[in-house]
Image (cartoon, rainbow, N blue to C red; front, side):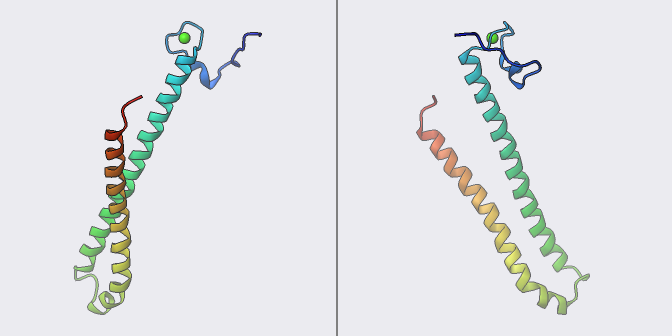
Length: 113
Ligand SMILES: [Ca+2]
């Protein structure tokens, strides 16, 4: 069978980790693992950012609600919306914490491959 070649400037050129001009199955597997780890790291960063935004928005909402900038009449109107807002954002935070705990417990159970 004819040897396969990658096109010029292929995205897989970086897969030749030891720069010997040959991309071995082991290097492909390792590259896939590295890409997966980088994607998981970016996803974790995004999730952390979402949780921080949720937390800060809830805190800011409550702080602004307690300032004299918001009249008592407006607080009465905002309280039903605000309670839904706070519960929804606390749900995001709780889901993040619970899923992280679940993932960590699974990582501790399965032996590394
Ligand atoms: Ca190589």
